[in-house]
Length: 249
Length: 244
Image 1 (cartoon, rainbow over the protein chains, first blue to last red):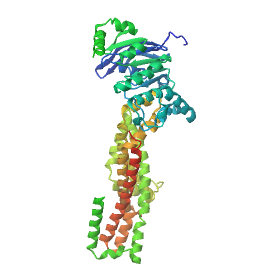
Image 2 (cartoon, each protein chain N blue to C red):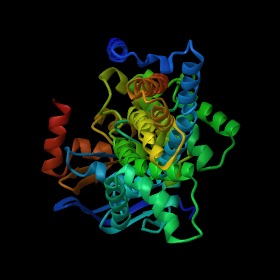
Image 3 (spheres, each protein chain N blue to C red):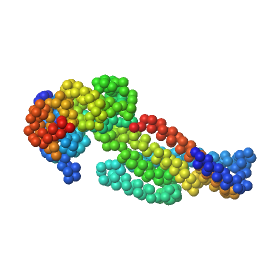
Image 4 (cartoon, rainbow over the protein chains, first blue to last red):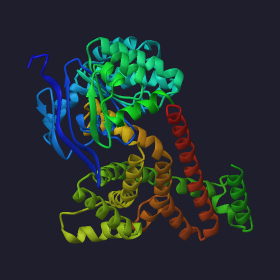
């Protein structure tokens, strides 16, 4: 499977229920290697659920999710394979508060990838430099600003050498002045060829970075297309209304 | 601290109203011998409590984890264990294990010490299980999700992510259990364990001075537990330095 055009993530008819509430209604989505997808939509539209299904933080009830040729199922081997390929950055950072930045970054490489302490440490420093906070390595998460914490969280995913990164509203819990530093790191990642799916309301980032925009509403993918097309000429009324609200607030 | 001093003063006053203090007067040979006799019980009180709580923490954790499982049968196992063990009075458990178990089969022989340890550990483990379950449940779901997203398995997630945080949170409760255990160990005196209470009982019978002897006994427990509290608090503060 070296075909660049073959999708690395393919979702077919994916549905997800929370009790009686249907969070995803038969969603189809394809993501190619190196593609940057930005998912937007009003709150409760199912965009977080969509990406959380990809690494099975949520279990979908029907449909198929195929990541790098592996179909996501109850088989633990498939899950291990997919989680190995897919990293995730959370809205609330979810750093391990009792571990230093360095320990946050080396835990996975040492326990999962079997790296030695020195190897894991070297890798951690490489990625900390990439997110521009190598000097914070021995601090605890709470000693860092929100923006710095989120950059550590990004570095933690990178340390696992994931080929696909999922971002679940990575800037929504940040103060305005810290949003830029996180988006900058993400933009840099995007130019490095990482496959990214980003749930965000940052339309400036979407315009600049996205290859593909996905607009969701009420559990459905309402509109998909390149940003220049969907921003200037949204096909659906729902997306047009949403864009209006978010751009002219 | 002021309350402690006040209590001590009151106890001393209670004792002073009697003329029997000579039995524990350290300036006389007899008093000194009596005191060292009583204090020598501390060895077994501490050994018994510390062994029992170490075992009960391990059992408690092993019982707590199935209580957090998605599988209903694991959860039922947890509930059943906790409800049954918690319902047996410690004293009854001590008698049951020491006198009851050996009667089942000749193959079972238990010393006084190990009967005591097993009874105290079992009894405490039900409470430990609930403490651990509560502590683990208090850790935010995001911590599990972050661990999953970097592919940590269940064991590593518990060992490196969840338990270190949960233990910081339940430390006050664990300290409580240790204090409780020190006091519960006095019940093992009924099967002849030579710990603090048993020594006091024996002395009280020969000296016939229960007020003075039991006053000293109360003080022994008080001092022991104050020392434990001090160290638990210090540990709490040290861990809090690296808390969220």
